[in-house]
Image (cartoon, rainbow, N blue to C red; front, side, top):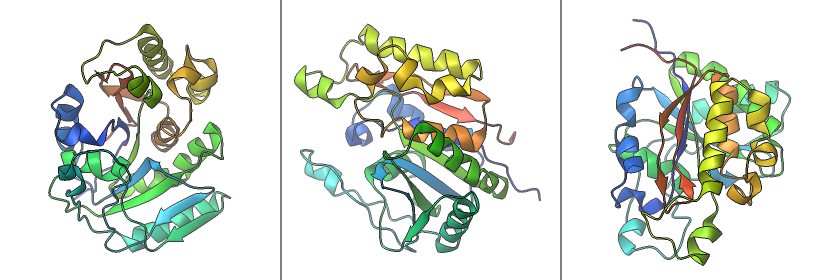
Length: 267
């Protein structure tokens, strides 16, 4: 039997309360498993694993990290007990090292909410091995693109690569303006999301990599780069061919777009 060749994905994970609050983005993530062949393992590149250099999780049983505060107890009670994949973690580290980048294995770190929240919706049985690869806000967009290119061969081995962040991410605008879950979408958010889509549709990799600098209201949408960096890694892993899988907003200022890079199998 031919092994599946996986695409690379970018998903916007939003607030961890997406697990409990109805929304189009929640519905999309809950159906994500139906849009790809079942992977043998998943490599998650989360905005919430931000290190000075590339760090790969090597735990055989990564714990669930509740890296947030101020939410209901039911969210802290959630566990996502997916197995790790130490051998895959070593392979990820090898590929990154061979591409000329410093890389480190962390045998203890668990899964942060940028990983387990979307995974709990898409694969709720937690039966697919998970490895996390860090972003690095200390490095530019191009570094993340090259890291994605380095791990791209894993797609041929039925490893699904997912960048998990947010297409727009200005939390101050949520809290300072008291926005509710279904707040209106301001132009400065929709203009940026539309610009990114147009550049991705055109295959303009350079423009996308500089979206924060060149896109409309880029720095307002990303006061810090962490939540857009997984997009660049997914783009590097999957190639310039992009397909938007989902588009919606929560709290008015979080664009919950999801993209597929590269073609997966027909099934």
